[in-house]
Length: 126
Image (cartoon, rainbow, N blue to C red; front, side, top):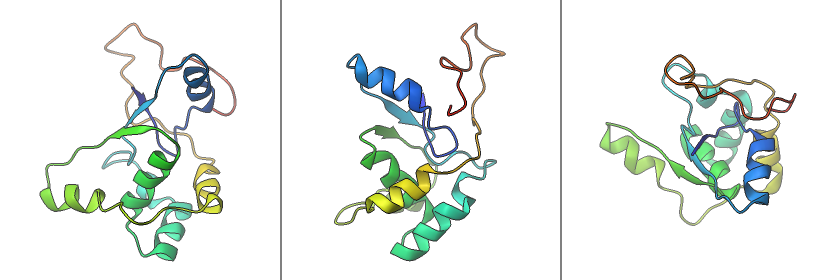
């Protein structure tokens, strides 16, 4: 389970996992209430172009990247709208546009509570 969204794509870790047969499960694909992932201009542009919400665009980006995803909400309407993902997909150009986000941000940094490192691979892409 990896925090996966355009601001924390961790390509080296995802590539490593795929290489050894570990399937990635992404959590927090929308960031959080305090993060700006859903307000990312690239995401907003793709959402407007397709008549979708930024949340739907982010979920589709994760799903089309071949990751499973875990999302949560206390609002039933939000839960239903997030999963209106049938009968459409994003073209490769839009997936690449979202993947080109340069901002890097982790929503959850639990290093204070555990002895686990915040990063497994430290390179400029992660």
